[in-house]
Amino acid sequence: MGLALSARLFAQHEKEDEAAKHPFMGDAARIEAGRKTYLGGCAGCHGPEGGGGRGPSLIERGVWHPMTDANLYTTIQKGVGIMPAANLPEDKGWELAAFVRSLTSPAVDVKAPGDASAGEQVFWGTAGCSSCHRIGGKGGFAGPDLSRIGRTSTLPKLRRSIVNPDYERTPGFEAAKMTLRDGSKLAGLVKDRTNYTVQVQLKDGTLRSIPVEKIESMEIVKPTTMPLDYKARLSAADITNLVSYLRLQGEK
Ligand code: HEC
Ligand code: HEC
Image 1: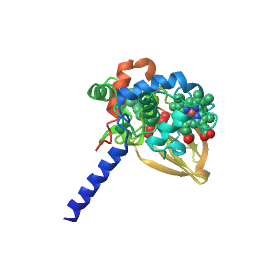
Image 2 (image 1 turned 120 degrees about the vertical axis):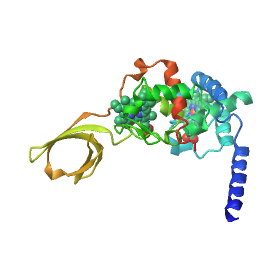
Image 3 (image 1 turned 180 degrees about the horizontal axis):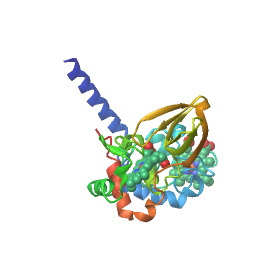
Image 4 (image 1 turned 45 degrees about the vertical axis):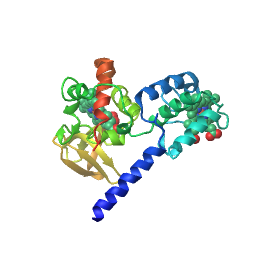
């Protein structure tokens, strides 16, 4: 009975959250409309992807995420500091707020364009993503497990991870070669480094902790093994479909 009660309270809580949320939030068409307005009137100061410039980054979560939808809307419409007031019709203002919010919302919470099942086929097939990434216990080990990536990433970050992996890195995937003082050689991914040990993951997935005094030399061969040419290799539709598939990982 206790369980039923708390389930009901939880449902009620969720409903309140929904009510506080403006209906444009997470709506793909409104976000896209907001993005267009953004490119015209805001990108000059906040950067084309929201990464900042004259104005602060709108991607870095910590800074402004605690803002309620209403605060975000008011900041945009009325301006703040040197930021001019946008003074747009209400709908346009909310579209902008929905776009700015989408820059930091977990990807699962934002409806994205594209065909997730087509993206699934690209992921497990032609693009070879699954040779390095795991989802739901299947796939390779060379890259991060993506089973919950829809919760831990945002839509723009998912897209950037595919087309521009250099933009921001997930630590723990530098490929290194080492020669040890006893003459043996090792190759693997550097998972962790302290002043005392380097933790390396070998090709077969096993982890080894190597005390630094045993290392003769170490060279980072590749800062990441994530291919850097997917933007050229995949079609725009493939990329949109991939994002739409990945955003659903972690939905439940
Ligand atoms: C002239 C440059 C400029 C333009 C144009 C501009 N901003 Fe800003 N924006 C800023 C600056 C600077 C701040 C920080 C103001 C402060 O805190 O004093 C800011 C703050 C913000 C914040 C709050 C961020 C925070 O950390 O609290 C949001 C959200 C925002 N801008 C969105 C937008 C949107 C959407 C547009 C387009 C309608 C826009 N801005 C246009 C310069 C600009
Ligand atoms: C040869 C191995 C390899 C292949 C193939 C590969 N990746 Fe990656 N991927 C990596 C590595 C390593 C990282 C982590 C290092 C980094 O961020 O650069 C990564 C990072 C990512 C991230 C960011 C993960 C996070 O935690 O934020 C995403 C998303 C991603 N890859 C998606 C893909 C997709 C989609 C494909 C296929 C189109 C693909 N990868 C193909 C190795 C690979």
